[in-house]
Length: 107
Picture 1 (cartoon, rainbow, N blue to C red):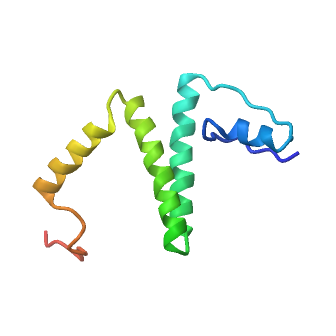
Picture 2: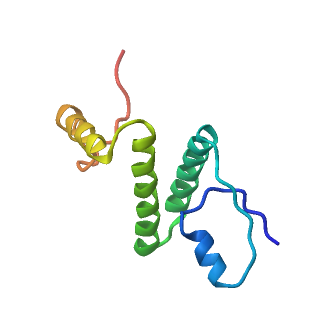
């Protein structure tokens, strides 16, 4: 039986159950849950970086966005607040659409 030891989406146990396979899960305490959310974001980021086509890249971005929703709530906020902060930063410092690559700054 493969061992995963990782956070999975809420409905994955039902998906596995429908296949007739047995599985083991547990509910994480809050501190460990937050840590595992961060690990999962790293995992999904790595999968995005390794995606070799647009479809797979979008799937991984969707996973990252789902995690961002949960993490925003973990920080006592919401995606609406994250979007507000994003817009404020874009107004003050710009975005990344202009493809600016900083080489150096003179001291």
